[in-house]
Image (cartoon, rainbow, N blue to C red; front, side):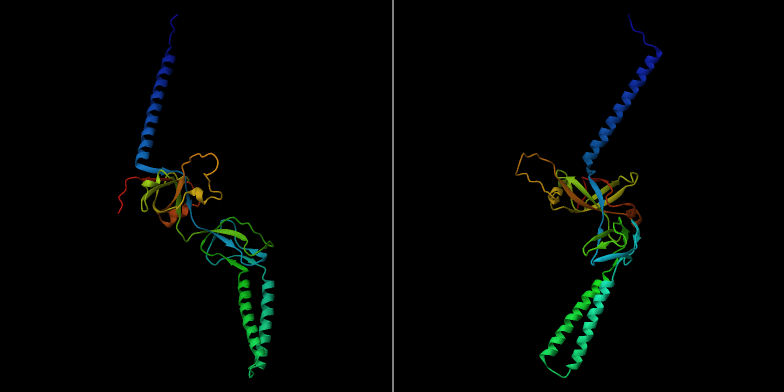
Length: 278
């Protein structure tokens, strides 16, 4: 029995055909644009924004008496970030000053004499003066200040916490230096890249904005060579993996534009293959 097609069936067939054609055209256009991009540019999305993040390290030991910053707070160079109990340092200074006064009095008594005792007292006074300077430096280190203009990172200390010299207290993101992009290109791509090449940048956080930059340096080794456990291909079964070379790119733009960019943001990097080079 011959199957009859209704008007609805013919309409669905026609719509399906048009949709299929549109999808094929869209895929073809996408493929052409993608291939054209590969032809004109060396591209990678394995790239992040970076900038100097300065660690705040204690040079004195003791109990924290006050913390004067909050997380992500903007600070100026010289602002007090936290203070450490300085009473022990003050007592040590007072003891040293008393010993220095004693030596000075002894030298006055031995002023007209050229004896070994006078030389010993003079040497002791010199030692105490050096000790006083060292203790004064320790006292100054109980006040920890911002080393530069920037913004504080996470706060990991609190009042009355006991810390030791060398402890990490916080991080400050430096606002006084440039920002850059570290793009990890495949080793098969770097042959066409040169220092001074212009770069097109798109940040995932701001998809509608275009940034530009310039290649300023190449890593002297692959990224895996600087890892904690570098690969050793001399043992076991060898599987060849394409390595990546970190490339440092300076970002161009005004101070307001650069302030929008934060360390760690993902970036898409495109380097035109045909560039005029001097």
